[in-house]
Length: 159
Image (tube, rainbow, N blue to C red):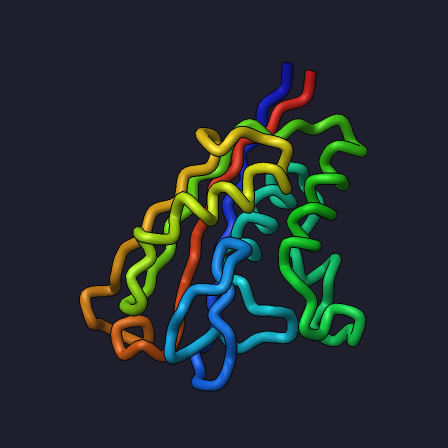
């Protein structure tokens, strides 16, 4: 059996007038993430972790923000497609561990719903999706509520 680990990171600016997509769901918020697709920073970080573990470059390589096909695209499509890419190469996702860095809104009330959405997209159990949230202690662009960061680590295996 072969195991690999990948690390993903994403950041998006927060602006008024956009839905706040995070972990495949819309969270009530005065601001949403700005981006070419739905700007779901958590899914983008997970995709990068999975692609990195499989040595398949990154999300921007596969879904360029210059390509109009991906404009406004639901990021759940990207995660499902990345999962397919891995499976086509014999990789199985074992687990993902994620951290969201954001001042507001509070994420903890939404974590279980995000896990319910994300797990089937990766063909894994909810218990294999870890999502944590923290603040930036009011420092920097995250602390000023101008942006959001997400990090993810993924473990994949091939028999």
